[in-house]
Amino acid sequence: MIITIASGKGGTGKTTLSTNLATFLGKEAQLLDCDVEEPNAHLFLDIKWDEKQTVTAVIPEVDEEKCSHCGECGEICQFKAIAPLEFTVLVFPELCHSCRGCFLVCPEDAIKEGSRELGVLETGHFNSTEFTHGRLRIGEAMAPPLIKKVKERIKPDKIAILDAPPGTSCPVVNTMMDSDYIVLVTEPTPFGLHDLKLAVGVTKKLGIPCGIVINRHGIGDNKVEQWAENQEIPVLLKIPFDRKVAEIYAEGKLLVEELP
Image 1 (cartoon, rainbow, N blue to C red):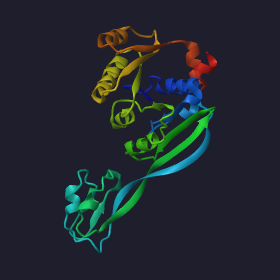
Image 2 (image 1 turned 90 degrees about the horizontal axis):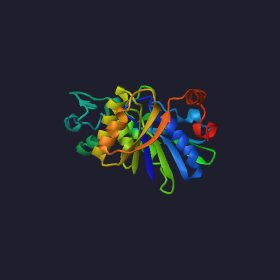
Image 3 (image 1 turned 180 degrees about the vertical axis):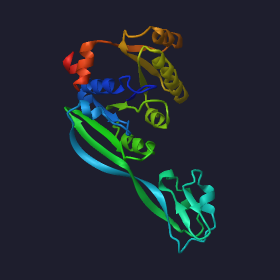
């Protein structure tokens, strides 16, 4: 089973829920931090690292001696990552989506595979639970390919808990895809409700059932609960706005261990 923990905005408590749920489930679960731009689940866990792997993406490299400057590669590239000129061909690696279209249309077979580093994939374990996360290279904008590599570590015999990036952009959608259930973490504020509606919209587009966890319950109003009831979306849990809870989180500890 694959459960994605997501939200429409950052700072709602996705990682708090993910790490505590994975710890509670123990050996039955594996935790995968898909927020590759800013992974932080490992900060709350005593990870024993087992493996580190560099992740790369395919980019075109042009053999100028073979190239006839026909322009076919530039025409097929929707992202303008390759630009044939009169006497040379310019390649912009950061724009390349690794579709290999230019390889297929080149009549001279002048384009070969090159690579550029996207980031690293690290795996380990805490207690009896397996852990995986990705760390995007500084300055790199292409998060989805690295998220895909993280998700390749999902094991069908485990309950896979995916800690998603914040928001509703492409990295979030890539994380949510193929999930069995999505847990949306929100807070009882106008901003929380606004972004929750966006996140629920994504789950509906993907056709994946979802439930809601309200963090910091008690600081705002009950409009989130009212809206969830109207939408027939279950509220799975309410985490109270409590000083003790905040202290445990600030110290990098887990609620299931400190408040069992």
